[in-house]
Amino acid sequence: MKFEQMQYARPDFDAARETFASLRARIAAASDAQAQLEAFREFETLSRHISTMSTLAEIRHTVDTRDAFYEAEREFFDANSPALGEAQLDVYRALLASPFRTQLEQALGRLTFEKMEVDVKSSDPAILELMAEENALTTAYEKLYASALIEFDGRKNTVSQMSLYKQNPDRAVRKAAYEAEGAWFDAHRAELDELYDKLVKNRTAQARKLGYENFIPLGAIRMRRIGYTLEDMAAYRAQIKKDFVPVVAELKKLQYARTGVADPKFYDDAFCFADGNPAPHGTPEEILAAGREMYHALSPETAEFIDEMFDGGLFDVLSKEGKAPGGYCTYLADYKAPFIFSNFNGTSDDVDVLTHEAGHAFAAWVAARKDLPMILEEPGMESCEIHSMSMEFLTAEHHEKFFGTDTPRYELAHAEDAMYFLPYGTMVDEFQHIMYAEPDLTPGERNAVWAKLESEYRPWLDFAGLPFYGRGAGWQRQLHIYEVPFYYIDYCLAQTVALQFFTAFLHDKKDAWRRYLALVGEAGGKTYPGLVAAAGLDSPFAPGTLAKLGKEVGAWIAAQDAALNAR
Image 1 (cartoon, one colour):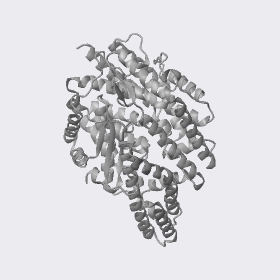
Image 2 (image 1 turned 180 degrees about the vertical axis):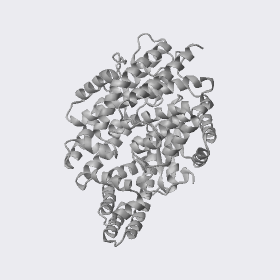
Image 3 (image 1 turned 120 degrees about the vertical axis):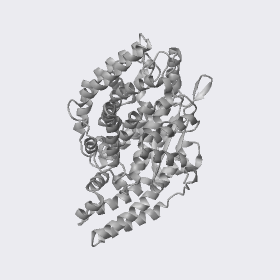
Image 4 (image 1 turned 90 degrees about the horizontal axis):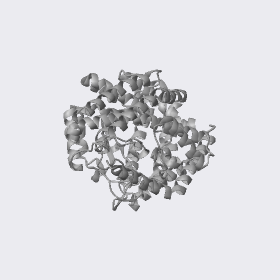
């Protein structure tokens, strides 16, 4: 079925809660494991349908945030999902208390129950009102962000569309683009500060009602961090500072030398080549067609997958007014269909959509064919991002379809970007730990923390009094900080693995793809450390992993830089 044919109908949440309560009672009263499994399968069927309707409403709302109908539906889910989620958790609680748990674990998997236990810890009837308020606040932030129309170059641009100007070969244009974008955020400073303050205090209140000192442990639970600890993550951040930041600082010198920028400022940071960053060739339609051709050539599995995506119209990638910012891949459970949302902007980001988001979609497509419990269809988010970030590297043989003779420059810029991201993403995580450890900080104090972290994680940057960025408020541009606390480090954990896939690809392309399929094939059946081990890669938490990785990828980047300079 094509996406446009998928019918939306608001679920009857009252009836659903009654059904979940009935199923919970059946599980509690069951005299054997088989009866409990039958009730659980009915629970899964209804849960999948509600998830599908919620996802349809979300997609159609983000495609056009001005659509009043789907805005109302999004508000309905924001307000009512917490209570429904509590009814679903009651079913989990009944299963966790089952005297037949051994048989249930044999049928559903032990990790299913570990994930249920974590989910049960994340909620309580006492915080449902706060959870609904949190949903409304994140929706308000998304709507405010999506409303941005920035006057530049004689037109009104969304934040996404400004990316093209921020990579312009003309330094004056880059600077002006950052100033114009920053001015919009400065003009909405009070709203952005107020929304974040309310979110921090809301989440802190939720955590304290559940008996936690602050939101940090609750945030880890909600991210389903199984198999590693907050201490492991602190050690990872310390490795980034000690072993990775110095490597990136040296690579930045190569970039600035290559671009001929003698006194680099923040608006030069994303500028990779003196004559401009490599951009994909062709129209959006031609880029999409090249993506389909790429996945046909990559493997039989990806060929079948990409045909279903195109034939089902499961993309919305063109940037337009009213469309929510950013990009994502989501999943329509009733149809076993992934969906990719993005905002093409004429930069290499457009190709990354066809590798990164399609990596998510491919993993979802593979898992959908395994008849798994919903909770095992995907791993933790840090592992889901392995699927996407690794695909960016494993499709390298086909990037010429998009960039032609510019491919070597794109490959260099892409590897550099992956390396440069790790300090930034880790900084975002440490910032959030400080925010929730000290929830009463003022807006000015929050900006001061961000500015201090910038000096530690990205000491090569000079913000040169730019609006918004110059006062340490750049974190407000990062959607995850508002919408999904503690998610962003997952990109770093995944990128560390993806860079290992990159080095494996450089040594043996077929072996790297075999390892990737092995990891994707596990779906959510293993924890993050287990998936890394299944692919035969080094744990990012192990001492020395980041030093080794930085050295190897850094050497490849330096060699590529030298080769391009010699041309």
